[in-house]
Image 1 (tube, rainbow, N blue to C red):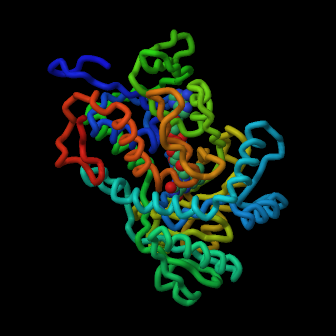
Image 2: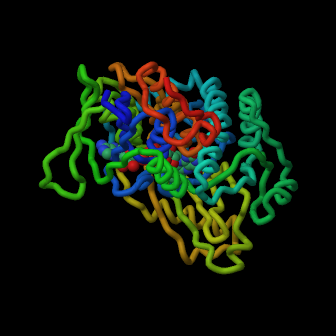
Image 3: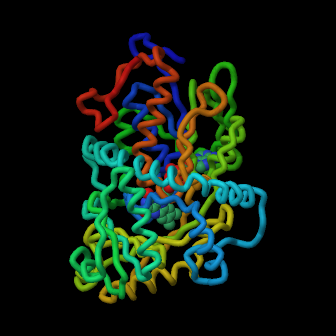
Length: 442
Ligand SMILES: Cc1cc2nc3c(=O)[nH]c(=O)nc-3n(C[C@H](O)[C@H](O)[C@H](O)COP(=O)(O)OP(=O)(O)OC[C@H]3O[C@@H](n4cnc5c(N)ncnc54)[C@H](O)[C@@H]3O)c2cc1C
């Protein structure tokens, strides 16, 4: 606790990680009157998993993967080279422990799917509210998300999942094969049927995170980039963060003390949590994307505007303005490996040419990222063992969809833990604050 303006007390919080979870957390904490410092090893915000993901803000993709049907599919896929799932055979204790917990979580499939859908619905007003209040663009397209199914059995499974979504309050429309073209006329294929969720939407996670980071700076948040956090320690006087300059191997470590810390470090969270005495079993589940540059009129006219999830290929698309189409998919269990493998990129490009033959794939930007995934597929949002230690991490395949609400939740929890001790006048008035994030001083 330090002296702030007019001799008031300021509660300092370190946020570890400047991906979508760290930046939304920092922003929400700043609105609540905390003095926030964000650390990241990268030179800018959103350079790791929050860089080029599938773009979907999708309550309709909230089904957790912990189900016997998915396990069976996974086993079949292990025999196919171009399958959407790949498990690298080298065993590690981390992978094994994660897999065992993943299978054990199947008993919570139902409630975890409903809970995830509820969080995704609740996130929408926060995500849109922050962008609106701060006035930045992120290529948002509010045109719904269309799921397409080639097989009857997958379609019937989707009907069951829809019933769970309905319990969570999500409405989606069942489509016969001949109704799909009315929703997205550009998609080619022989489908058994589809589901359309009009309330889902899409946007560019990188643009959003960068836009919000700039807004957070205007509200007093400090960003320390190129800062590789090596050690976090909890002591009697709070939390100390020790970091190295990622651009200078010869530089000595810097250390700073804070009243509190929120770990939002994506796939780096497990290691940092262990230093704080907590087990946060995040595994890096690798995925790939290609961003197709729609350079000619025919490509622009032939690419979809409605976002898709093709169930068979497990591929998603998002239209990012007139000139870009993002296509993403695959889940690879290969540890913390960020290599972009051509054999995983080719199926994404081939899929584009099959489903959207008029789109030229002459100019594509490939990318690979690591989903920070918990075994039960629910993010870890809450307190650690030691006082002043918090987590908002492990959002897996839905970090873009869920982070706005989990940031709201964790900032409320930090505020509760420090109730009566935040004294700093809030940057920006409560009237300016976006939905659900009304500024508070205790
Ligand atoms: C192919 C693919 C497609 C996806 N599609 C979607 C989608 O359509 N919809 C959706 O909702 N989600 C999607 N996701 C998931 C979503 O992108 C992630 O859940 C989200 O980006 C994770 O954000 P994060 O902030 O937790 O992690 P990150 O964005 O990785 O941020 C963590 C930050 O912590 C920093 N860091 C880590 N360790 C340290 C350290 N020791 N010191 C300093 N800094 C550190 C890193 O540099 C990084 O910037 C997809 C993911 C992938 C890979």
